[in-house]
Length: 501
Image (cartoon, rainbow, N blue to C red; front, top):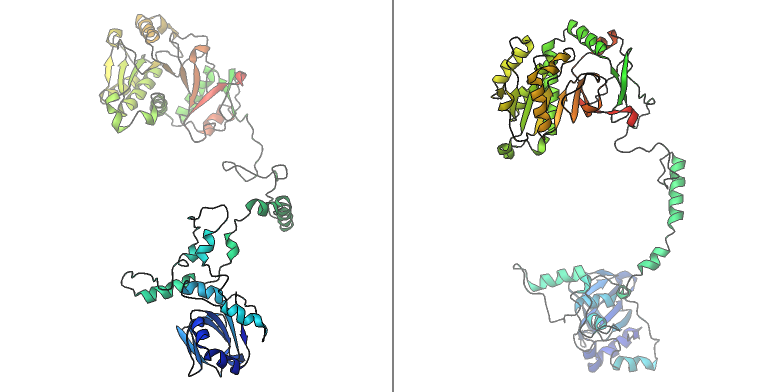
C-alpha cells in the first residue's frame, strides 16, 4: 500500500503540474477530504486537468455511500486533504475491487518524508488481484481457484464487461454487478471455519440447566432428562385427563360357569351356564328382541368374522373376483342351523361361493324355513347329501350341526357323515354358537363364536370369539347380570382363557 498526503492547495497544484505523476495517477484509488461541508470522497482517478487544476473520480463514494452519479470532478480550491490509497499502472482490476479498496484504512505518510516520493515512484507491492491471491494458496495446485459467490467478477479486467442479456445494455449490467458484488468482504473468509473448536465453546449442560430453571420458574413443563421429567407425560394414544383406576372385572353373573375369559385389554368375561343363557334370551324376546332379530344380528357378526378369516380386504377386491373363496355350511334343523343359513346369505351377498348342506327333513322350524327361502334368493348352492359336497378342500367350513338341547342328533347318520367329511377335509372350521363342554363335539374346530356371553366350552372349540347380538343392558340386569360392554368399537372380539394369562 503506497500513501502520500498533500495538506495545502499549493502542494496539490505542484503535484498536478508534474506530467509524469499525472499519468501515474490514472486508475489509482484516492481519498479526497473537502472539509466538513462537502465531506470525504473516494474513488478511482480518471483524469487530472493541469490547466484548470481539477481531478475527476469514477464511481465515487461520498462519506462511505456510493454516489448516484458515475463521475465527479473536484477543484483544487475545495480540496483540503488528498490521500492516495493505491497506485495502479494499467487497469488490472475491476471497479468492484476498487470499491473494496476505497473503504480500506489508509496509512498517512508525514509531509516532507523522503520515503513518500520513493514509494510513489516505486512499483506497487500489492498489485495482485483478488483472484490471483487465491491461486497462491499453499498446498493447492496453481490452477486451483476457490469460488466466492460475491467475488465472481473480481478476476475480470476493467475492459471486460458483462455481455448483453435479454436486451439490457452492458453498462446497466455492470452497474448491477457493482451494486450486488461491491460490498466489503473480509479476506479472512478464506480461512476454513473451525466447527469443532466453536462447538467446544458451547456448554450444553449449562444451557439446558438454565432453560430448565427458567421453565420451572414460569410453571412450564420441563424438557430435561427422562429421570427429571414430570410423571404427567403421556403418549399420543393416551388420555391426558385423569381417570379412575380401571376395574377389570366389570361383568358379574349370578351363576358363573366353569371358565373365565379375558379380552385383549384384560377385561374379565365370565362364562355362564346354558340355563342362564336361555333365560336371558327369553327376557330379551319379551322386550322385543325377537328370534328373527337375533338371527339377523348373529348372521351379520358371523359373516363379518368369516370374511376376515378368508382374507378380508386383501382378498375381497374388484381385481380378485376370479378367485372367489368357497365356504361350506353344515347346518341342522334347529336355531343354530338357522343362524348358519343367515350367515351364508350375507356371505353370498359378498361374492363368496357358499355351499349349504341341509338334509331333507320332514319337519323344520319356521325360522329355518324363512332363512332358507332368503338364502335361495342369493344364488347360493344347497345340497342335501354329503356326496354333493366338494372333494377338494374348501376355504372355510362353518359348523352349525350341534344343538344345545337335542343331543340325540349326533347319532343320526347324516350328522356322522357330515362330521366325517368336515374332519377329513383339510379346511379350517368355524363353529357357530357351539354347546357347552361335556356334550361333546364331533367336529374339531379352530375357532368358535359365542353370543353375548360365552358358555363353558371345551378344548375342541379352539379359539373363542364373542359377538354382540344387541341385548340391552337393562335386560341383562333383570336376570342378575352386572354388565359393562367389553366390545368397545367392535362387534366381534377374541377371548382368552384367564388361566393362561
